[in-house]
Image 1 (tube, helix red, strand yellow):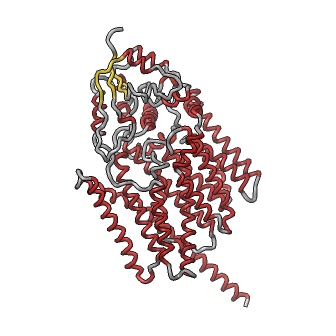
Image 2: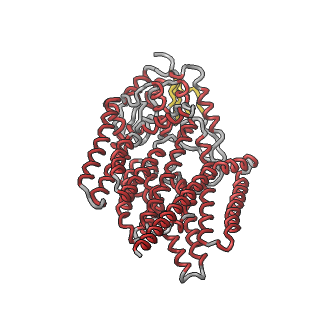
Image 3: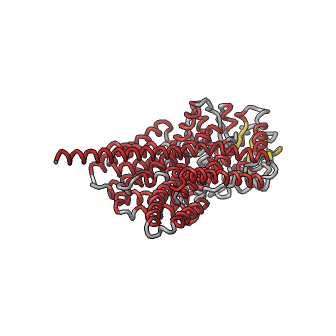
Length: 611
């Protein structure tokens, strides 16, 4: 009898493992299909482009036809599901099909919308692009990435994102292509969404290890496009398609969080070592990534069970040693100039009032993280996840506070993506609870709960910054603006022409020019800048031509109204140079939008005659 009992137990165990493995493979297939849905949005974006080409003078009507196309696609996906399932069609699964289709359509709109920015040939869409390209240029010709501040051609960003972007561009044979640099940032964002999917998957598994993964398998069709929309949302991630450090930094932030989730579920020593190494690697991309040394240590000391002083000491030694080694290596490469540029931004100070305003502006992202935690942490088996949720909350609040340094919300981008992970995991559990409710005492109203949840989530999409109008809002005249700037470089050597912002022309000629406009901003704002070098060069009439935006405006890059004291650049420029013309700003249609100040009117100045 005992052998028979053992045989039955063994067969049951083998069958259970087989079912679990089969379910995991099926879930992996759904995730893969969801990722393909993101990629399939690209040809749909081309279809949107074709509609606008057919109706170039009537963008509103073109948007209406795009809406008709979207309704047809949604009806086709719903109809296909109903035709296949027939009597087995459920309200829950039908709602998920609708949600997955709507998410994929919004990704297509994003691809259409962002394509005009990605393909723009000049690096003047935001303030960071000019120096992003300038750092790549420095690396190409062997020029120091950080030099004396009197040169005015370095910036406080770390070089990791620029050098890695250049490496990928070089591998595909487009090492001087501005659009390729931006396309690589979109790829970083896609990879961040992939990691976020697996973060969400692990949260769901840990929160309910005994549940059948088959119950929520269809959710993983929705998860990839949803996470991509979170990673590229217009509110807290507006620069992930630009040449900025945000895209790669967000990828490392979500990867750091995945390592923490994996450690919580496995307590693997190998994972702990990776966690210890990540802050040092992250520092090379963005200084704020070193916060993971603090967050990881916080988790090991407060939430790790069983608590191990040995693990804390090992982690602290590797993490602090790694960050110190990276900083020392940078010092050996660039000397004291590195310290000035890499740590000078902290002198700007934080405005608590501005931080609070940013919290109000990004309330939806804060709320979904709280709601997701509320749902997940109510599970009896979710005690291990309390620390993970507290780490997210600490990170998000820290990002909110430090965002008070500037006026944008992009500091909150990584925290928002992790909030989306918690929200989605909570949504899976909440949807399952609704299914159990309608299959029991509310069996007469199976569609009501699913419909309410579906509508609520769909309405949240706009508040989270997912929804964009499928219309070209990038002015066509911007290309004329770029051509006019390039025309000003044809009469004399490139090295003798100073353009305040934009490095694409210098990249083509492998030329470094001093006195760029962007490095003046933070140094003038915090009062640490020494601008005597440029004043002397203006007095010497070092440049044969200078192209400067907003020369007589309070937002003049070299003498901004927010500087603690006047830089003296405007006066020195007008004393030694004269205006001989201008480059007109781009004209725009009512539905179009000029991206930033770097499309303003440019004054063309040449040296005054005489001594």
